[in-house]
Amino acid sequence: MSWWTTVLGGAFGFILGGPLGAMLGAALAGNLSKGKSNFGGFAKDYHIGDQQRVQAAFFSSLFSVMGYIAKVDGKISKSEILLAQQVMQHMQLADDMQKVAKELFNQGKQKGFNLDEVLEQFRLESHRRTHLVRMFLEIQIQAAYADGVLDDKEHNALKYIAQKLHFPIHELESLIQKFAVTSGHVGKLTIDEAYVVLGVDKSLTDKEIKRAYRRMLAQHHPDKLVAKGLPEEMMLVAKEKTQEIISAYELIKKQRSMR
Image 1 (cartoon, one colour):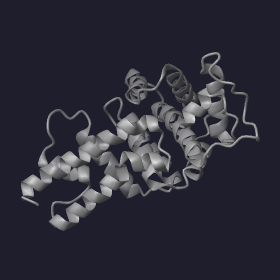
Image 2 (cartoon, rainbow, N blue to C red):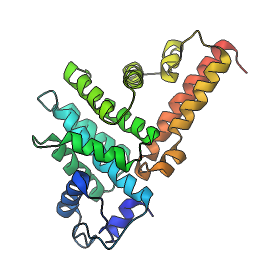
Image 3 (cartoon, rainbow, N blue to C red):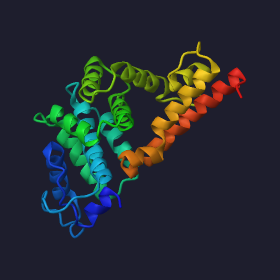
């Protein structure tokens, strides 16, 4: 059973607690359709599974921090709001779930949003699972690029977020470079872009490139990510990233005549 099914089943009295619990509770209380949930706070007599708890934390953090990123440059563009809506639609969220995601996004835009506490709770709730943190950051990078430009304030915000999540800055820069290369891409990847997608240098041997490819596949494998706590609603996003990695590797294999 997914964490959202638990919500709709009226069994959401679990302790997520902290800033994420408070934000998610407020969003749920104000946006769920009448009769679909018996939400009444964070009672201490019910506990959901660890995976559901991580999924709830990921969802709450993702959209609230996305709202923070949209506001960090001092203004919120229509493209940034549209990007948030597109992510929700891409995840094929039900209407109730979209309402909650939008409320979390709006909370992240507020002046009193406590980014540090949200990030620290997400880091702890996710048990420092690097694959989940990487996916989280990839989506925040996408949000930062919503207006077509990554300005200094947004870049610094991304670095700050990565540091708080104990994610290596050099890996963040690699993710940013990859997104800059592939965003808005029309048609097939070029060979240079394929190397960027895999995060490898042309000087590497075939064996080293194959090793890097397998590592990236493992990092983005949808089933593995869901097992680690990625909300099931994000399976499609993970699958698309996996397909991008596969396409890049196939192009490099063909260019190098690799077996």
